[in-house]
Length: 332
Ligand code: TYM
Image (cartoon, rainbow, N blue to C red; front, side):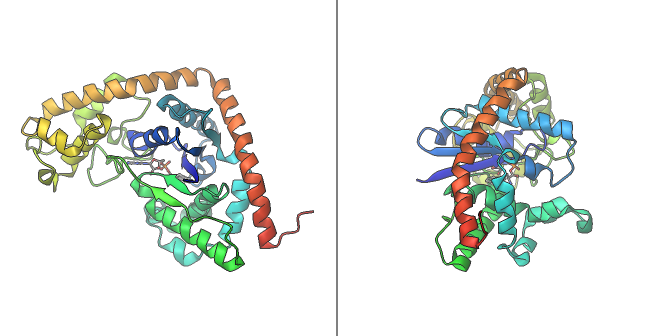
C-alpha cells in the first residue's frame, strides 16, 4: 500500500463518531503504513470560528489523536495551515474541479442550509481543498467515516481530470478506507442524523472530553423506543435509535452487532444503557485523562505539530514543484 492521509476538523470537541469512525482506525493502520494525519484548521474556517477557540480546538484535536494512541514518531501529525502547499494546490485544483461537481455535494447543501447566498465561498470549494490535502502527498488511501465518501469520490475525479488534462500520471486516485463496525455513528437524540461536533444539542453526542458523569447522563437521556432491546440484527431494522446504541456498544467492545443482540436481546433499555455507560466510561476515560494531560502542556503539543509540519512539508514540496512544472508555472 502507498501512503495514507486523513484529517479532522478542529471545529469543536472531538466526538465518539470521530473516534470510532476514524481515529481508532488510524491507530490500527499506523504500524504497517506510512501515515499522515492532519488537523484541518483551514477547513474549519469555512464557517465562523472564534480565533482563540480555533487555536484551542486545534491543540485539542491533536491531543485527542495522541491520547487515542496515534504515535507522532511513527506518523506525521500536523496542522494544515502550517504547510502552505495545501492552499497552493487547493487553488490549482479549484481550477480543475467543475461547478457541476460541487453542486452535487450533499454536505454543502446541509451545512449551507436555506440561505445558500450567505455561505462562505470556502464552504463551497471545501471538497477541492480536501482533494488538495490528499494529493499534495500523493496519498493513496484515506481512512474516513462513511460521511466523507462523496468528497472522496470527488477527489478521485479531480485527480483523474488533472492527469487527463495535462497528459501525465501525476496523481494516484485515492481509495477510501471505510471500515469497522461504526462507520456512521448517529446522534443520541435522533437515530436518523449523524453524530456531529456542530449539532446544537450537547446531548446529541458523546465528546471525547466528557467525564464519567456526563457520559452517564448522555447515555441515560439518549432517545430509545418503548420496546426491549432487539434480539437480532433484523429486529434492529426500523429502530434507528436502538440500533445506534447497540452499534456503539459493538464498536466499543470489539464485537459484532449480532453478538450484542444475542447477549442483551429482550432486556430493558434501562439495563442496557447501564452496561453501555460502564463500557463507554472504561474505554473513554483513560483517553480523556490523557488528552487533559496534553492540554495542560500545550508547548508539548505545539512541538509535535511543528515537527510534523516540517516532515509533511518535506514530502509536499517536491510534489508541489512537479505540479507547478506540469501546469506551466515559471519557477525562477
Ligand atoms: P470531520 O472533522 O467531520 O470528521 C473527522 C473524521 O471523523 C469521521 N466522522 C464520523 N465517523 C462515524 N460516525 C460519525 N458520526 C462521524 N462523524 C465524523 C469522518 O468521516 C472523518 O473521517 N472533510 C473532513 C476532514 C478532511 C479530510 C481531508 C479527511 C479534510 N481534509 C482529507 C480525509 C482526507 C471532515 O470534515 O471530517
